[in-house]
Length: 105
Image (tube, rainbow, N blue to C red; front, side):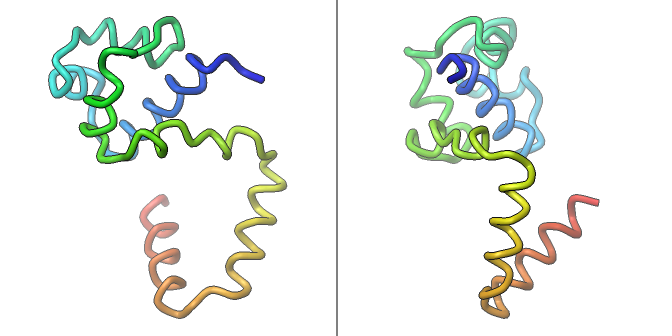
């Protein structure tokens, strides 16, 4: 299994990019230097003192911050999960998924 620092760093980068904010912007929100945030995202250092601040700045719980399940699945397994989910999805959720996918183009 990958090092927890690497997984956490990747997850923070992933969430930051979803919010469309730069490293500098997030660093300012959590009151650390941009270089320190870069080291966290690269898995060089662990953000023990700033974890709660990071989760709040990214609008996620600590539990969500440590959700690495998608790193365990192969692309094939992820596609299968999505296809299986779509088979039984409600019409309202289907519209949400459609808008989400369409926005990624």
